[in-house]
Structures are given as structure tokens and as C-alpha cells.
Length: 332
Image (cartoon, rainbow, N blue to C red; front, side, top):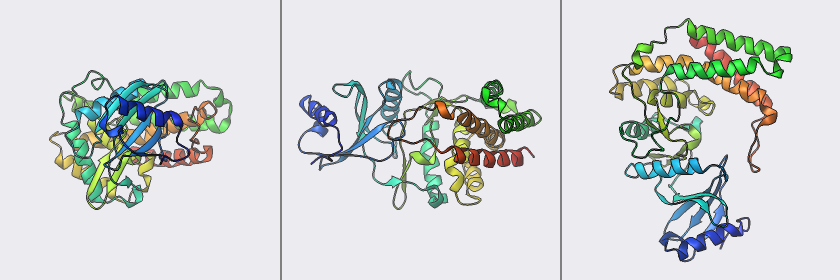
């Protein structure tokens, strides 16, 4: 029996897959919509013999489907990564890209409840991904994020230039905030960001959206990483540091960030691991200041899916205040 809110076109699409010989879609199954999915619609398909997720992307996000499908195929031997069974760039009847993959057991984590063991297991997954030298697919060989700190600085400079030229500068409070962020950015120029550490570095395959919202925990000692639609080449140290400076990680237990990052650096074969982490931990709070202010400036122009609500403007200002304080502490 299907959930009454499941669109008929999803049911027809599964029936079409069954007629095309896809065993997982054959026989009786139950479909229900799933909560979550910021940009995508998600449905659980329970066949009795297993559970799958049917992911419907916005019609113009074919590239994301291709990245996610390619990454799941490339990483199919790794525990903690979903197994893809079907990818369709233009699903008949749905007129949208559709990916179907095995549903991993467990539930989304709550950052406040994550333990050192959880984070060590999670970093074990990304370390194995980062160790892959050949992405195995041209789409995964494309950049998905910064390859070195200079890329972060360039992003900040371009964003601050755009903010300084926006109509929002007519607001004295906004103008003061931009000036404050420009001060923080100049503070980075006064630091030794040790560019020589990246002279021989090569970007690696990364998840691309590594944050608590994409972590699944199965009790008691297994975690998994989902939502690989942003996978590609970037600096693995930026990816790991970015997890711990993401707004979703604000609720991690006190002191946990430092302990786990230190443990990660000890496990790394890169002799400059600790130095690289120090650089990114100075850069990322400032970068998040710029990102959040850009969201505030463009708040009225945001495009969100009908089933989502944007983060309240007041909450964004609170995020910005917190990151300004963190950035100032790091720069000292």
C-alpha cells in the first residue's frame, strides 16, 4: 500500500522500471515520502526484501545526479556509502533526474549527541575516499571546492567586493558589518598562511558537502555518509576542517572538535597535516562570515523548493555574530 501523498507518477515510474526488468521494482512494494531533502524529493520504497530511496532532483540538476551516481559506483566497495541501483537523467512521467539506491540502516545524527567514536568512524570513511588517487570518472575529476587556501581568499575577496557594491550598503548597520568583515579579511593577510605547505599537494576525491546533516548513524558503532551529489576534486584538509566549522557542528560537545582534528592529523600521512589544519581553522570562520552576510544580502532573492522554508533572517544574523566572534578569536 502506498502513502496517500505519494504522487501517481512515482508509482507509475516504478511500475515502468519493473517492466524493464529491474528486479528491485518488481512485485509488491510500499512507497512513502520521506522528510528532509533540501533540494530533492525523497521517497522510501519498501519491497519486503529490502528498502530503497528514490531521489527526484529538480529538473535542471542532471549534473548532480551524474556526480552522485558516479561517486556511488566508484565507492561501492566502501562500507558506509549507499549502493546505487538505477540512475535516469530524465525519468519518464516525472520529467526530472531520478536516482535509486539502497537505503542504509540508521537515522540522521544529532550533532550534540555525536561522540569521539562516531567522529573517528566518520573520518575513517572520508580518509578512505581521500586516499583514492583515480576518481575513475571525468565528472568526478572536476573541481568541487578549494584546492588550497588561496581559493578561499579569492572567494572572500569577490564576495566582499559584490557586497560593498550592493544597495544594502545604504543601510548603516549593513555597511558597518561589511567594514568589520573587511577588517577580518585584512587580518588574514597579516597572518602567515604558509602557502609553501601546499606546493606539492594534489587535490583528492572528496564528498563535497561533508556536514552533520549528511551523516547517518546505525547503533551502536556504525556511521554512513550520504548525499554525494557534490562529490569531486578538492583539498581534503579543507573538507575535514569545513565539517567542524559548519554551522551544523556548533552543537558538538565542547573540546571535541580540537580532539578529533588532532587525531585526524595524527592518522594523516601528510607531514604538514597539522599546519594545514591550523591555516584552514583561521580562514574558515572568516569565510563563513562572508557566506552568511551574502545570504542576508540576497535573502529576498533566495529560491527554495516549495517544501522548504529558508532559515529565518534573525537566525542568520545570530549565526553571523557568532562567526565574527570566532573569527576574531582565531585571528588573535
